[in-house]
Image (spheres, rainbow, N blue to C red):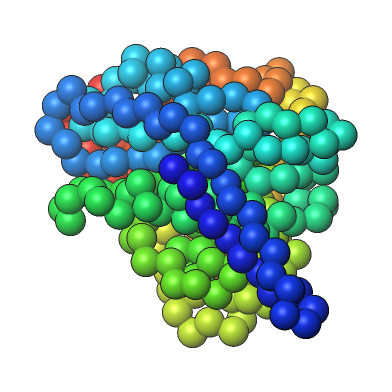
Length: 257
C-alpha cells in the first residue's frame, strides 16, 4: 500500500513523497473478538517478527494487525535504506521530527483500524520506533488531527509503548493549548509505557522523559513501568504486564489474569 504526501514549498513548486508500506500480518482472535490492536515493529524489523510473538500471548479476544514499515533512507544509518516508520537521526525526543513520515505512518495505522466493526475496541502498540509511532498516533487522537492539520477520526481505547520515545514532544503542549477538547480526550486514553534501565539503544532517560511530558499535558491514565537490567528487547515479565494491563483496560473476557 502506498501513501502520497505533498507539501508546497516556495513559489508553486510541490514536493511529493510516496511511502510504500510492506506486508501486513494478521493474528486472528482465538476467542470472541473484542479488540483489535495494530502493533508496530522497531527500526529495521518487519511485521512478521512481532506477529509470531503476539500469536503466543494469552489474549484470545484480540485481533493483532502487524504492518511492515516502508523501506527508506534513514539518517541515523547515514542514509542507508531500511524499514522505518519515519526518518530519524537520533533515537530520542531530542532529534528533529520527520512530521511528514510520522503523519504517513499514523494515517496508515488509522486506515488499518478504520474497517474494524463498530463494537470492537481499538488500540495501537509498538516497540522502539514502533512505540514512538504509537505515541504520536495517541497525540493525533487527542488533538483530533495529524501534524499536517488533516482530521484524525479513530477512537483509540488503549496505547502501548515498549522501549520507545515521544516524537514532537517539544510542540505538544502548545498544540494542546489551542484545542478545547484535547485535555478531556487525553485524560480518558489509557497508555502503558515500559522501559528497561539497561537500554543502550533508546536510553531509559528518553522513555522516562516522554512519560513525564505526556503526564504534564494531561494524560492522567498513564502507567510507566521500569525493568532493571532490561536492554533494548522484551522479556516475559514485560509481556505478562502488557497482557494484564490490556485485559483490565479493554475489559477482555476469557484471558488469563
